[in-house]
Length: 86
Image (tube, rainbow, N blue to C red; front, side, top):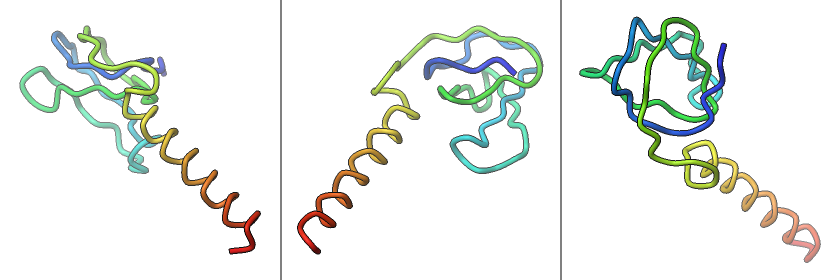
């Protein structure tokens, strides 16, 4: 159940399975391999196996950071509409 803190590309893995339900809503664990589906996303949990990745994005530039930024921007727009009576 280790939480991935950054986005990255898998460069070495051993029977790696990741829980991406936080981002996709799918409850099935996703098998990751260097030659097939090597993208690892922040905010997801490693459920089985091990691996090494090259970090490609952190913080607000990661996929979860982008989602949180968009959700935050949407919330501010809704709040502005309520204040204006719209």
